[in-house]
Image (cartoon, rainbow, N blue to C red; front, side):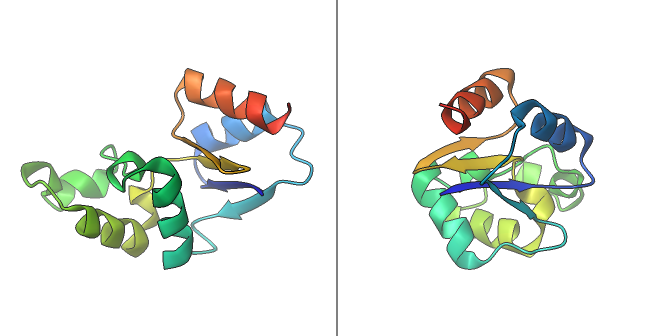
Length: 117
């Protein structure tokens, strides 16, 4: 399975999708218009090793909700990711059991290699 969870309104996601092209045979899920299911988030966690690895501390809501002053548990992080898409570190790229989370240059290069090997 090849799937990319992204945000269509995010310029960084748009740039990365262009970089990863061609996207033939890859399922794209805009997490703003098509909410992630608990099963999808659990699958991501199983591949990534933790909800913390999937969690974006850059989200504006992170500070607004005072989360930077707490240490949310794994189950709280899961609930936050499911409650609001902004907490998912994006994009999340899944390629045949491998997961690539975030937009660092290294992560995008590794994802590109995995998608087009």
